[in-house]
Image (cartoon, rainbow, N blue to C red; front, side, top):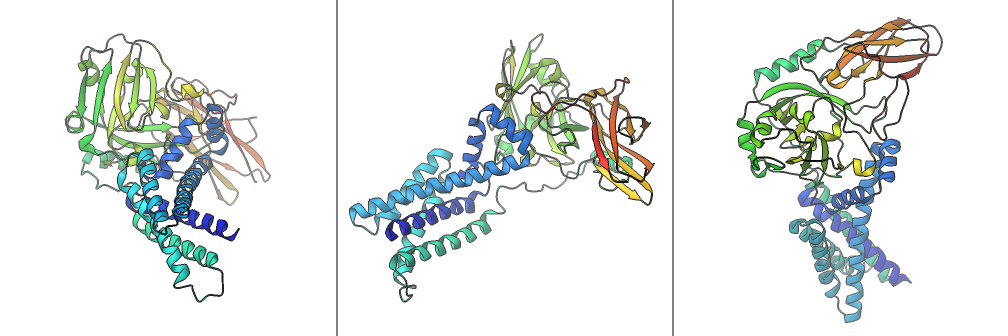
Length: 485
């Protein structure tokens, strides 16, 4: 019994070390097996499970998926280590367990990730624990008053913890979004300054250019793509199929634009809606070169396997962005190039875009195959995110957005919808696809009360009152919040 238990613990320690060994050289990237497994689980999960994770668990769902990826990888490596131990026993060899484990871990990881270097370090780290544990058990711990099995367990755990510490220290800085140097662009500086000047001064209200821009995608770890290797392929029902490389794209006439993105899967008053200044190339020149005329629709495909379809008319106002707030796109936001389709839900603003396929008839995109229908224009919303108090005065505020339809007013009720007053709107930023802030100050009624907010589009259309969940076409309804008097 003790031998079986010590073997299991040793194998588990080897599994932990194998995970740490690969993290040391690639960090949290797609080449890291736990990340690859977590992404695979998300892609293979049925639509109802993904919908539950998105609409109920939110960011916790993604975290749990990453934890599952780590668990699966550690368990897989531990199973391979147990196999190595069994081979060693059958051959009565002390060399076989680490050697077989190293080979099995290396081969399996290479097969699953296609990355031999982290697979090699995984194998070596696991083999190291398998080799060192018996030595520590019979050497440094030989004088301890415990059985050989327990000494091996302590040796395995100690060596695994050492490898994990070193692996984390080496890998923590790898695979993250390195902050690029800002381009000295007067237009970007001017737009960022304009956004600062036009932002309302309400505590807790994010400025008009977001300080923390949300990220949502189908990956546990964002792809890593070299600018020099990137190209956009234009395919499908076109007069000419061709590729546009990164240098060619960035040499085209570009412009700096404010554009807001909103996630179709967010809660009604959620915080997955943000704005940035994007440096982007209009897609019109590429469309004209391709010879697109009365085609049906477009499928954008990404380097991570993601794909989304939408009407060709939406593409005519679209752009390909390669900078964000004056810096190269962060990896999590689609480096080196992403699509921007004004006024549409974030899901069709495809990141890491590599192909634009012109279609003759409609087909389902990635999320449509899982039951969602969020490719159309975004729903109008007024969010309530800030409550500021100064004596008997209360100021509430938030952001409002209606895609390219624009916002003309936000109305606030402090009595649960009985009476309405118009809020102060931030000055309009340049562009047709950008949010606005709103703020409203009133005297406290001295008791708990319900504040309700609603928006009007530029043409006076009132935001629909009826509430609906994010699934399947994005959340709708008036936002309300109870506030203490």
